[in-house]
Image (cartoon, rainbow, N blue to C red; front, side, top):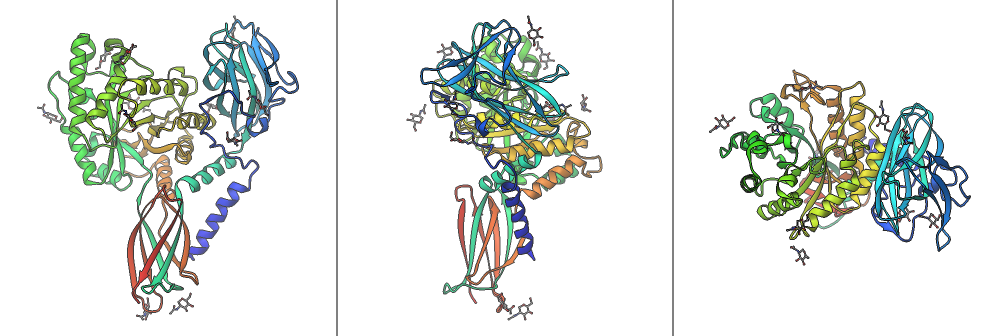
Length: 577
Ligand SMILES: *[C@@H]1O[C@H](CO)[C@@H](O)[C@H](O)[C@H]1NC(C)=O
Ligand SMILES: *[C@@H]1O[C@H](CO)[C@@H](O)[C@H](O)[C@H]1NC(C)=O
Ligand SMILES: *[C@@H]1O[C@H](CO)[C@@H](O)[C@H](O)[C@H]1NC(C)=O
Ligand SMILES: *[C@@H]1O[C@H](CO)[C@@H](O)[C@H](O)[C@H]1NC(C)=O
Ligand SMILES: *[C@@H]1O[C@H](CO)[C@@H](O)[C@H](O)[C@H]1NC(C)=O
Ligand SMILES: *[C@@H]1O[C@H](CO)[C@@H](O)[C@H](O)[C@H]1NC(C)=O
Ligand SMILES: *[C@@H]1O[C@H](CO)[C@@H](O)[C@H](O)[C@H]1NC(C)=O
Ligand SMILES: *[C@@H]1O[C@H](CO)[C@@H](O)[C@H](O)[C@H]1NC(C)=O
Ligand SMILES: *[C@@H]1O[C@H](CO)[C@@H](O)[C@H](O)[C@H]1NC(C)=O
Ligand SMILES: *[C@@H]1O[C@H](CO)[C@@H](O)[C@H](O)[C@H]1NC(C)=O
Ligand SMILES: *[C@@H]1O[C@H](CO)[C@@H](O)[C@H](O)[C@H]1NC(C)=O
């Protein structure tokens, strides 16, 4: 019975990923951030773009705004389009395409500027006048940078695709433009394919007698005891006083972040009077329940988020001393007990410490944190990078630049750095094409990405949008963990509430529970074939298997692990019959 259920599930997946139009992987991200001398052809052959590589002069394209456009030919004969004599950021060129409601459009183009380096963005302009920024990148002169992004079409409508760069003194050069539509089913099929490749391994199990003779018809039951992928949830101080909250949390999650309780403003409200009572209590609860903790945060670069005595009364020198005491205190206290630290929260939007202590303030704190707790991964942690395409401060290109600054600080070359993306989505349709392009871009740096504070604004489609965001994160190969900032209403989680005041699931709570179940292998009951084999695809994690001879009823139980390092594994179970 199990075999049948499993086989049909597998067939469904295969159907999903071979059964639809484009089979090309959208997770082709490893070369995304390099500026290439040898250029790249248009992805998906340009998709629905007319004349994507300008081999037919400017057919399909027209000037946008007041600039002028012309086709250029490089020394090696490559034809591209240039916008020059620009007076306005959006003076460039455009092509009009038709988009269909509900489809997801991935955009890409090779871009270059005529001198220096500048941010170049792609913009989708609707007939209503609404503009959606579809992505941006820092383009350089002398090589071609891949600009990736896209939109989810909320309406069936014509839309004009154009480019933007603030410095009107430079020309915008573009080649090999691509806009590829995907249905939501096709999008989902990329995700299934990636999950099978990246989150599961193909496991062959053989049941034999102690003399190695294969046992045919042996009954095998496999149970997953631990999941390797960190899919966790923020928690707050209410966990210390509510057994309902404790039970709710511990029955679901093995990874957490304390939403506020480790922050400086919580542990040292009054200068010199540290109080870790609450944070310590939460660490104790987590340990007792086998829950791993991301430390959040050592510092927060927002002037409004300092302890009251810090942002107003301290001179630069006093701040330097106080900050040194803070970092030594909190990082040493939890040394070896955390899986991560958000060292300088939100240092792309804010610069409280940079303003007071100098440009290297963040970088220096990363150095100190790593010295104090060398085994723990040190994260940047930002909002809007993947959830909102129009916030240039925390754009993926600026994120990468800041990360490189931190790494180039003396002593930081080997920092075990992580990329934290908060993921506070609004109540509207999340731009999944943009989100995937951001994960591609930052993933190409090679550093692990965690989604650190995922939630979705209050609205009628919250459960659906939450599911879309979580699936996009889980299936992306560069993402190594997801923490949501969500929970029961009794603990104050009023943005994405998972449980009502009686701890019954909300629709968003149902989504989370469904995904927890989907992302692990359910209990399997099966029997071995003629050679004593069974073949299964298992999620990475810990397992317990029991094999029972169907004649003597003798059995053996053993534990095994399925890891990412082994895409194919062989497990042998011997039974003394
Ligand atoms: C993936 O990247 C490789 C290497 O850059 C390229 O040859 C290939 O065409 C890309 N495939 C897709 C679907 O983007
Ligand atoms: C565009 O793609 C063509 C191949 O289709 C290639 O010859 C050309 O160099 C590419 N140009 C850029 C700028 O990537
Ligand atoms: C610049 O472009 C914007 C957006 O298209 C437009 O609103 C504005 O009027 C333009 N400014 C000038 C001086 O043309
Ligand atoms: C044991 O399994 C084999 C192979 O499926 C089957 O032929 C045989 O009848 C089974 N024996 C018992 C006692 O269930
Ligand atoms: C520390 O915090 C706890 C919890 O808020 C409180 O009960 C305790 O009185 C505080 N200790 C001091 C010395 O203020
Ligand atoms: C200082 O921090 C407090 C919160 O602790 C905040 O209310 C206040 O606005 C901040 N002051 C400045 C100047 O940022
Ligand atoms: C700090 O940054 C400045 C530039 O802002 C640089 O000149 C200096 O060398 C840096 N100091 C260290 C220790 O890296
Ligand atoms: C970083 O690692 C490399 C290779 O292991 C080593 O040679 C180098 O000294 C390390 N740098 C620092 C600052 O620790
Ligand atoms: C429309 O789609 C874009 C993403 O393509 C999104 O940013 C925006 O919020 C959507 N609007 C609504 C009302 O859902
Ligand atoms: C959630 O609660 C906070 C604090 O009580 C309040 O400021 C905020 O408006 C509430 N948000 C929603 C969506 O109810
Ligand atoms: C094995 O167990 C089955 C029921 O599970 C029982 O009917 C059978 O007699 C047992 N065989 C032996 C050899 O104990």
